Image 1 (cartoon, one colour):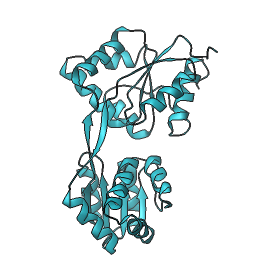
Image 2 (cartoon, rainbow, N blue to C red; image 1 turned 90 degrees about the vertical axis):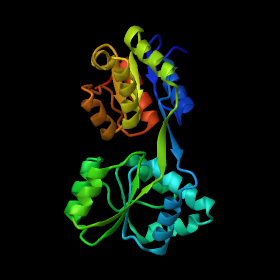
Image 3 (cartoon, helix red, strand yellow; image 1 turned 135 degrees about the vertical axis):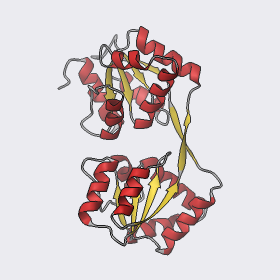
Image 4 (cartoon, one colour; image 1 turned 180 degrees about the vertical axis):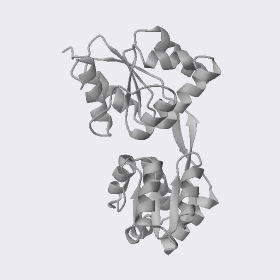
Length: 273
């Protein structure tokens, strides 16, 4: 049966849940085109990660900060590969645990661990303001990095008197080659695409960096502020769009792909608020 989005086209950039998200959007009747932009790759044979897990399990930290759900899962997998998953989870129960946004909170729930501290807004700046409010002088804080350094956040904690130890858990890598991404950009510019979706800030950076290398960044931003509506999950990704001069027009009621697909369907059916 045709859905309310029949005849409309939605472009998706998701990698890890590409097929699941495609199915959710297609249920609303839309045609989906896809170009996965980035994938997270765990850092393999990484002695720093092993040492960090040893310190965490030994009780050498007071607080643990998780920025991403992928980071939680990769750390748990690394502990499991060392036969120390139960010890890792038990150590988290003894710590104060902070999570930047809903994705790490969901990943921690999978381990049976809630969150003691969660910022509003769920951004690095919001997290730092929260720590300033509760006080961290003398606190030994572990910070899970998320594919790239976060020097402002680390410096901010240290300025408050915290003793910070970071751990690099994964890297971002292209999920599609440059020519495929350029073809996707040209489709956004030239074809009848109604919506493009982003579920993380790095996806946005990846797309615009490729566009900029081809001299297409400005025209892409104009297109995404015009006939192609942008759907996005999370304030961090929305801020990344804003830095590129692009306004998000579709936001789900909950930070989940099913909710994003519903919001897209509502938008295309004229019901989006």
